[in-house]
Image 1 (cartoon, rainbow, N blue to C red):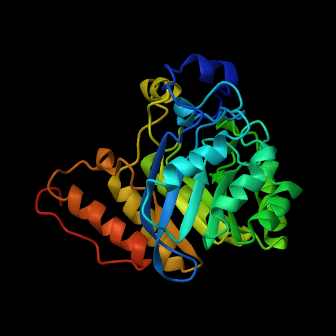
Image 2 (tube, rainbow, N blue to C red; image 1 turned 180 degrees about the horizontal axis):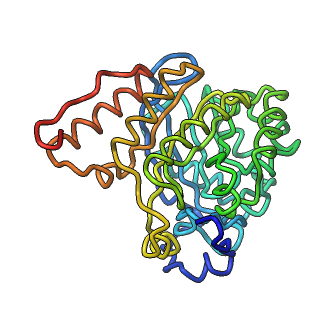
Length: 313
């Protein structure tokens, strides 16, 4: 399987559909949801999905490009997006600024806007941004000082599988990830890892195994939190891989098994991404109950007894 050639930027981009129309002066989505925080409390987190320029890294599994622009937003647009969302959302204790790219890429978030952004977020207990491990420069420390509150950087580890990671076109190594976490920890910046469940080229059982191994690697590296994301299709190239027998989505059982593993290891917070999770359920009888169980475990960080189902066994 791993004798197949790697898929290039050109092929990944060529397989895409059309982008969604977005407004540079408004976030393309925003919401408030509860999360189990580092303090051991369940508190509300405002998540703003900021509109900005497309990420320069064209990862094989990514579909975040759908809500991005082809050029950098004007100076002042990102603070305006924060104002737009925060005026419409209920109060929250923490904030995520997710921008479908890398917060510390100056072509994504203009550095000129940092003071205005800091003014709007410094009242939150935690400010969480996403960034590529290779872009964790001294800018992270400078922005931390500007906001004057706890900064957390979410980094895509994806998988530590030695053959799959290079084929994701992420243009990073596990050494890059370890170095980024160590640098951020030295600046008292918290970190969380994004980990993929069943990326292309892996079977269901291999997907579970390597997600669990990646969780351990992330905590060995020093992250504070791990978020497991089931790999979905929908970006064009994933459909091509599925047609070639090189990708299948994970099951809800796989999500359950990986979350149970992470929680029982008790090395830090572990979450599973439940957006659109109904697509991974094969049984209509127990699917809603299983998703509800995963949601409770996300919030409690305690594993619950497994469910049994008369319909699917």
